[in-house]
Every structure is written in C-alpha cells, then in structure tokens.
Length: 128
Image (cartoon, rainbow, N blue to C red):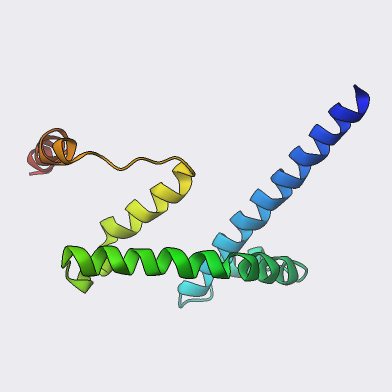
C-alpha cells in the first residue's frame, strides 16, 4: 500500500513540475513578444530554465505541427479569410480551448445559430 501511495505522490510531483515548466514556457513566450525591457522581464529572467523549456518545446513540436495543419484545413475548407487569425477573439478562443484540455466538444450548429448568437448580441447591446 505504501508503494502505491509513494508512486502516486511521485507522479503528482512530476505532473506539478511539468505544469510549472509549461507555465514558465508561456511566461517566456509572452516576455519575448513584448518589445520593451521592463523590470518584470529582468526579475523573471532565469538561467537554469532554458534547458527544460527547450526539451518541452521539442517534445511538443510534432504535435504543434499537426494542430497547425488541422487549423489550416479548417480555414481552407470553410473559406475563412486569413485575417481571422489576427482577431484577438480567435487568440482568446485558442487559449481557452487549450485550458479546457482534452475532451472539449465544440458547440453544435443550433447552439451557434441560436443560444450563443443571442448571448453575443445581448453583450454587445449592454456595451453600447
């Protein structure tokens, strides 16, 4: 029983470390995008993190290529304009799907036409 508990705890620690590494990678990507060199970039800059980030990025490279290809197919088959990618709402959508994780089911045709459209119109009316 102790071995099982120890293995579970070890797996939990590994997952926690992986999640922390992924969040550090995201923070580094965000700091790379900013053009200015503020105090926050100076404080969060670390020396030892570069190796792990590179390993994580290399492991995800193949998966990212597959996801990017599928995203492209979605745009091409739906005849969507490419400037949709520049829309901040598209970026938020991709981020939220990533946070949701495995098992996300997209909204149905009916939900897009009725429920979600009405909700979006109501939110726009409130802001106006």
